[in-house]
Figure 1 (cartoon, rainbow, N blue to C red):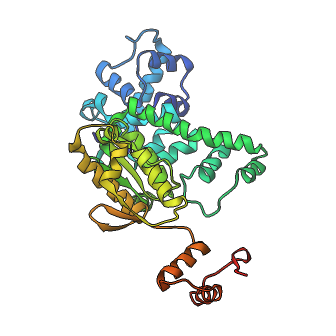
Figure 2: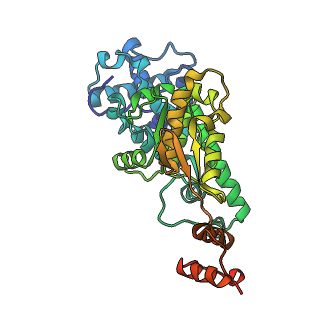
Length: 385
């Protein structure tokens, strides 16, 4: 719904500050649910005065009439503009939700109106605005520096942050742990009270697929468009809250700050993606004394929570994508991967290899010469006397 001119539908609390009307007038409006400028003007259009409102005296009546007439004249408002779906205007509800929950002024939110109504609301730019009101300067600095949600040029240790704000290392750690919980609580309030907001933005992420990948490309695209510097970790965190009824964020074990997978609940219920992810982390990062092959379909059986094998194909597809893109394993055949040895050869292994290659017993000097020829780097404890 578009209103004529550049009038802003201010919240009742804002009108009180702007127009300096009495506390009694404010309370009368509050009790009658005249909580916005448009509602006051609409009431005046409909009734001509405010005398039928409970506890409204002549002074209050005159104050409200003066306010209504002031904006009627200033913006040349018509009854049609005021009554056309005014009660169902989602942007107005959103705007007042922001004022009441974050103390963000109607003027600050008004700049989002056009994009909101066009379905191109810059939701994350708005979140940054909300953060500025949610957190103190100190807590916002900790959010920016220590939660992995912002791309920062300089990283601060907990001790450095504590020194900056004259608080202890432990206090900084406590605040760092609390901040994501506060953000989650705020997002849950969004979903409970204004869930319709998801219909007013579009970030070209397809949540109809079995999984949705949030990566550096996602982050860079949103950051460029909305002039932000959030990390993929932050976007994955927020989208996992927005889509909590249909998708889950699965990886937990590895320190991954680039790629995050939001997977449909049906598949997460059938397969323990978190354990799978952590186990692949262990296979690739722990000590491996030999190279061997991993048959993915056989390996997945360890993490299945269902006997419905129809789900194995989409699960296998997702896991294959994770293995190829997150862990860079070599695929030698369809879903057959190589787990490479990641430890240096021991001296004894080189000696066995030399003996096998020669196919006969060797003197100690022969073995030493062959080791030198193969440019084996030996420590003093490996030296052959």
